[in-house]
Image (cartoon, rainbow, N blue to C red; front, side, top):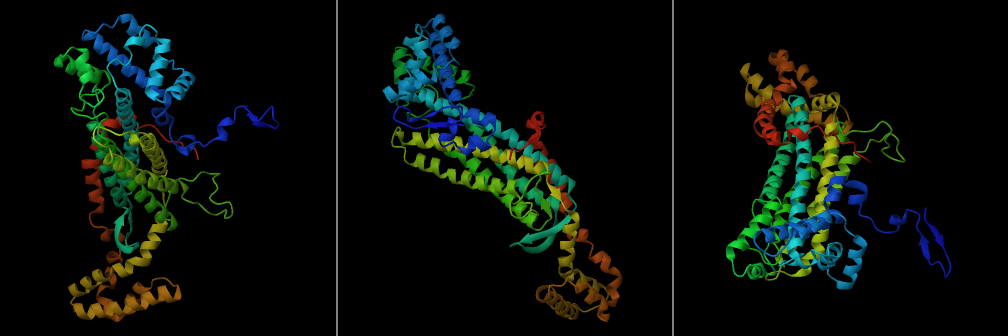
Length: 495
């Protein structure tokens, strides 16, 4: 615990290891996101990647004939990871330029290589190319997590493919569906998100070595007007950075529409997860479905009986933030004047990491939910029993007509009995007794022996089980094949 010392000689806090509690910490990192995603957007990942990019550039320039020695490159490689962050911060305080601060810091530990670090490059060579690497790596973290969520929900859908349940439109009871078929509605949206995220990942290119306004003029000068060498330089660095292609044209930066494309796929995922978790919350209220609940977990400080759907609520809360973040890259892309303007920088430092960090914890939480969903078939059956007599009226009419009755007469009989039963439910709080009323009315004697079959819930679910089977086999399982090796990871959620 920090010890506060008062007096003119000690106007400070004596640090004893808890000074981080004296400043704001983003809950996305301190409370929620995974270690791998937090590292992906860390200063260490960012600035070691800058050094890698300077090494790639030097290597390619050496191969293409510039006077760069093996010793210089070896010196840079030997200091790739040992960043003096305090020195870099002091340099930035003096220079007011983050890239030059790190050039100086790198040069300090690489005196032999100092003259050729960042040779011909502009700040966006390291800044933008690193951002593209981090975006790519962020998708590489998210996609297997999304695949695991889809896999767990697919197993859930398969297990409950033929369990009848009330469908709802306008949140009013509608025709029956199945628990598994409803899960397939969730899965279809998640599958769309996976395809969108995979496409956004695959469409990412390297900014490359383009110079200050994207013309490659500085590199053309370095290679004395040799256009082929400039193109070879970009190709070599692009390949060393792990990309197949670089953008053929850029300004000083890569187009900020790329950020829109990436964050659009994440915002769309946010909308999907919000819908899924809202459905779970609604079904939890009906006591038909529950998210996992720990043995010693407390749902409410005042109401001990409560089992609040807090995981689903967390997902909804964070999903709203994820959706809202899309406004940032849209507006940033719209105000990039000519070859670039720096009012993108501060915004992107927030919106890009927060989008990936938010998507990361949403997927981890949803995986945890989907691995422990609890279904209560008896509650579902009771709800069906309350509503099914009303839904079966058309089937009863059809059976009566087949037995020789008149459709209009039967319709009127059913209408009157239905209104009477509805009054018992709504005005008296009683159970739906429509079936008993039908059984007591002599008019329906010809079909009384068929009522059990007519009221079998499985006759009201149409082709839902068959749709589940086909959807999972044709669209869901093939989508997961590239991620089979990463499917066994389970999520133990830290609450």
